[in-house]
Picture (cartoon, rainbow, N blue to C red):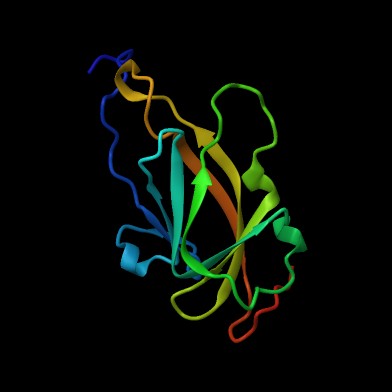
Length: 148
């Protein structure tokens, strides 16, 4: 492939993240949270928390002091960032998530970056997220309270 050519396929990456150990995992059965694509036309990702994930819309992650007692589900739909160049605040930046880890701890997280993606082969459709960056904090073992 020449340097100016756009690849038509991307290499596989680790689909999941182990929040307690702070590492990517290739086996989603070892993941506390992972993302997967959807088939909807606008482009979206599903955030999956196998043990449960709760969406706290309109709450900044720093304002979440305690894990919610209910409203956990295994998957939450996240719309991808717009690639229109509007530079508007993305809704997920003011949305926190609480994830139950495989070991029963709680982690709060938010998406710091939900990057718009281009479409391969010059097409006009496809999953719009090219990358994500998130931050998280773990509650102490046996606690639902977050220290920060």
